[in-house]
Image (cartoon, rainbow, N blue to C red; front, side):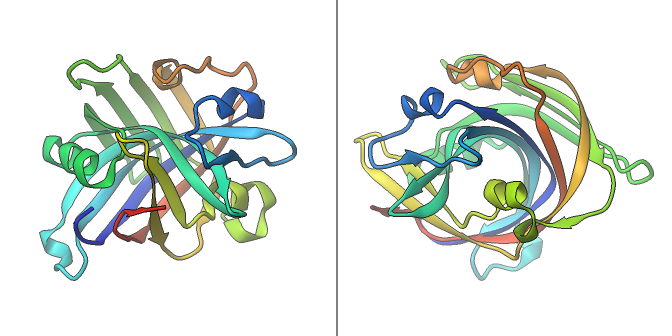
Length: 231
């Protein structure tokens, strides 16, 4: 990343599965270890949309909208919790190329549609990867919140999954890189989701877990991401 970025994350679903840590270890670069909650590693699919994506200091009205879906896990380095992305699919070709070039993130171009029904509170999300030469990956779901909101720092599992303020990537030369992410603490809601298609895990070498996922929803928050730096 050439300059720090500001953006908003909106209409997020966190679809989370506990898995054996050994299933994740082989997919991580050297220098990162699997972070565990109750003795398990976790895989998460996260569909959402970015809004007002812009360089730090630019007016919000000049930002762009960028729907996205990612597959991620949870890691530690030097005792610090972080996120590691296996893949990120996004709508904008220029944004995908920029993220790959400057941030060394495994972004893929996809055709994505996200529609939010204000009356019902449900979100309809559909993504199909169109990136040349990449493995096919698709995701279709309708999701939304149920019940009362919770402050993520006050709930052990929610805190583990979302209260993380850095992520790591691996550059093409094998260099480990780090980006800091600043935002307010998350408010999450229990959620339900009708997932019709999910081949993201298979595209990244994982079998879909047999256990039922844990769902959380968030209406979103605003974020600032630092430059990518070599570890």
